[in-house]
Length: 375
Image (cartoon, helix red, strand yellow):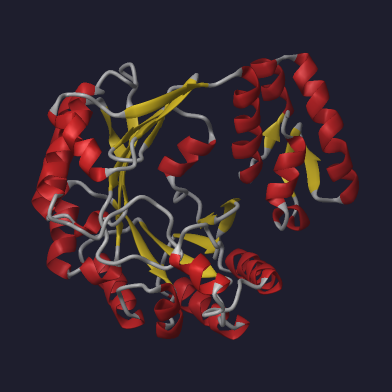
């Protein structure tokens, strides 16, 4: 299940919480599209002929592109790679970009899954986040997507926002579960260094994130999602059967993927590499026929820790037999010793040789993962 990720590093404005690589200066988009095509051609052998089951346009804001640019890149991808006939082809989008005509063009171009960055159905919360769209536009974008023929839709929601009441969070979920979605991604607001949010909090312009609020709202989310028939298949992701994100699932299952664009990461099973996080440098390098990247060979310990990190996030958990097959009996014994306290505390349970986070464990997944790592 190899995948391709295309990073579109442009946004109309900067969200206060975001630390992804992007630029609000968009005059270089035509050059960037040519550079992305150039990297696709240079690195067409990276996946060693594996069939591609998912293509993902992320960002940034991919929906900022003209439809013709997306169609062109898809045609290049189909030319260079073996794309499965039923491949999941996702585009991340902001609600304000999703007119019916734009969505119809996307559907006809081959995009078959949309990830819409709603974040909240409250204008007050959207203002706190500095989102460019309104709650009304969010609802309209989903309605337009359905009219355009999209059946595989997901939206992002953020909880734990300063000032967001539990009542408002429940209202967001009420709307999400009433509009026919089959997938939902929900994230606790995180204060990342060097973001506007971090600056506002440090200077007292905004209240800090309340961990107790975030925990309550995560518990509400888990209960509400289960009641609506969603499977909590990954810490931040909920989907109905048959609608789990293939692209992200391939990341968490250790599949190989090719990342195209500035700041994009790639993984071939033994190493990782990531491109420079600079639009001008990326474009200059590709004009010269070179991909500007840094490569890291993964040690056996790195690969073990990544297996622990990604597997524990999933509802299928860590497979003891898989540790034995991939890393040997000594590592399995180390794991069984490290996991024992969490079995006793009720934060992990064992089922048919798999070690899975309990509801209690999901509240402290990062700490548990760290304790299970080999240092």
